[in-house]
Length: 101
Image 1 (cartoon, rainbow, N blue to C red):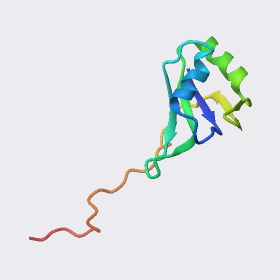
Image 2: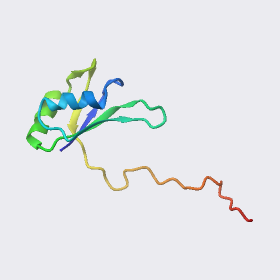
Image 3: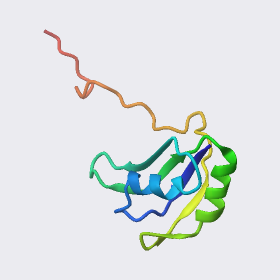
Image 4: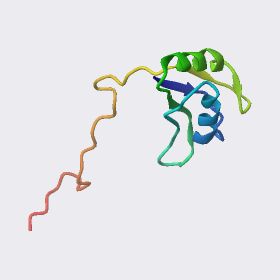
């Protein structure tokens, strides 16, 4: 099960997230999402747990608990819907002009 974790302290790392969820069972992956421009945490992340019972136990115990001084939100992640991503960027960067030579 994919789990969404929000309102994380900006200093919380993927390793911290892994350790937090491993208390409830096997964790396939744990990742805090990092902003590509600032290279800082966006304050949320995702945890993947293969056993749904363990995942629900983690959600029930950790939702609205305090981690690193912040009250976090933990819930089952919704599947990404069609058209949910950003529109593709137009490539080239030529301003619409073609090289005529």
